[in-house]
Length: 167
Length: 258
Image (tube, rainbow over all chains, first blue to last red; front, top):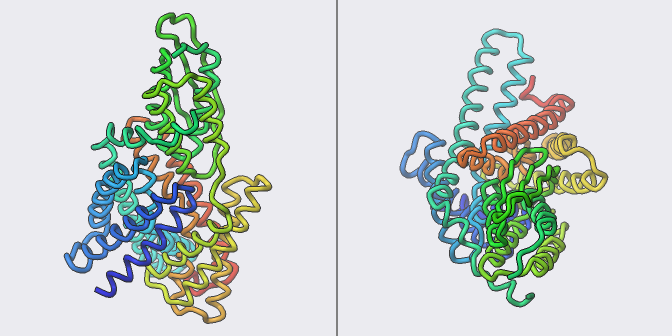
């Protein structure tokens, strides 16, 4: 349980930091941090407690759930859903896998021993396809929700009150 | 509501489209919002989106001989979610309240000139966020501090490079190198036991995740050309990041490359 809470806390900090860089309204920052914690925590739980074998499938489920929750938060805060959900997904980007894939590729190029070369190549493809599948799962998972609620996602910003004061 | 002249409306719509595209939203949203504004003023609008420029055609619904076509270069600015929100809301406000074009222009001017969050705070929060990434992947406290410092230095440098208008790809390359180099110095001084995780996390603040998700939505919503262009540009940036970190690993003769 401690591990899960730890995971959620750091995901929330990462979500908050990266969301802030995109200059969002302050109230959506809280939603982004909250959704980032839920997304990463859900993936952590799926992998460790529900024994999902594939990282990509766990990521897809988490990102789909966050897409749905994002639509709900967007409705409450009258903002476009992508403003809330996209920063929340950033902590799930498989950066470490990508980095290791690159290292194995360079090691493969530099190595001269055939056995070592084969091992590096296998490790490269292993990490590369994990990176690719997780990144695609992440993007498709959230896009599917935006496409299901396509017309509604454009209606979120209707009837905002700010402009009445100006005109 | 008075029907605006085609030239005045064209000027407004081209500026609106340009600003909205530069703020980093997906193409279907831009198309919908611009179409909504044109429709309420009695015009029809068609836009072709490309990565480098967009072409926009505005036609009077009552008299097709009254029309304008422009090809406008795109502006590639930093992500700005507040702009996406305000410009979307403006299109609905024009649609629902039937604002005169002059009033719509006033509102647009106010939205486009609003201030961003202070950069110093952005610097701190993104560095903290990236350091949290390190812990998320299993790094230790030493790695957390190193990644924080590396990100802080990389982001500060990026701010300067943006100010002196250095190409984005070169910026990515240099920043990835500097951030990973700072983390490497810490690893060399034995400040962290999880060297791999600290080095790998040090450059994650550069990964253009939002652009990637936007490009997938573009492809799924049939703006395939724009989506592919965006993906290719993301791949180029990721390659630049890889080259930056490879430079660190080569210069430092770090164990994993031996």
